[in-house]
Length: 248
Figure 1 (cartoon, rainbow, N blue to C red):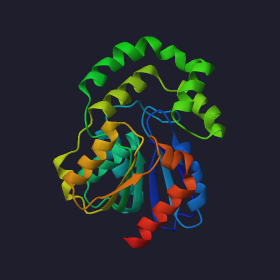
Figure 2 (tube, rainbow, N blue to C red):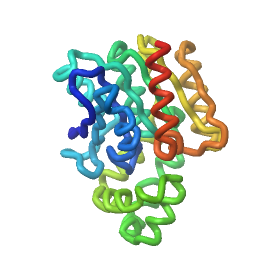
Figure 3 (cartoon, rainbow, N blue to C red):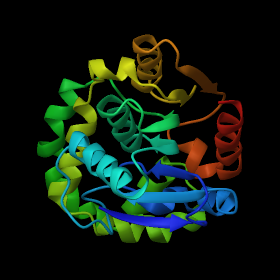
Figure 4 (cartoon, one colour):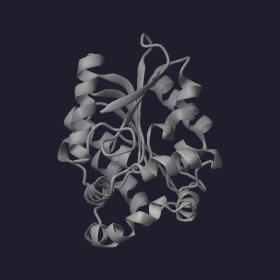
């Protein structure tokens, strides 16, 4: 796994895990806002543009990042945040190691599997994979993610670099992920964020996460759609991280 880093290494560390189909630049603006206060690490999840290995499972990605933390940060960090697929990897990390971080921000992560969507990914996505290189199609997909316009070129470039096998693999993993029982034993202070304009599955997932571990704090974001918080409102996202850390 490869990593982008911001800020001085002697500061306390924040890790931010990008969404599926994106890359480290998902959090670049937030990292730039926080880099004088913290050491920011942005992993590139397996199978994504700039990664060094194919995507296998959410569980394997979580284990890789935990190993990195063990080797370079004495086994724990101050805070880990994750969006969507990255949020699922974060939930898995919290399940595999209860003290991997002091605080966590889980944004728009699904924990309710969809058998139908999972079954349809390979037969429907495979034949249309070539469309991702069509700029008009890519622009339409980009608009559906509600990202800032100046991110389009990076989005288009990196989406084109994702292999079909990897895209199918992480989409299937994301649509089948469920919380592990060990998640309820996490020692971290966990904050769960979801927009009230997201799908019903994401909203129900946020409630499920907090039901499995009642100490989680649930934050509903009025008017927000999937991924908008960290991608489109880096200033508010950075402030939320600061407040979580201050109040821990």
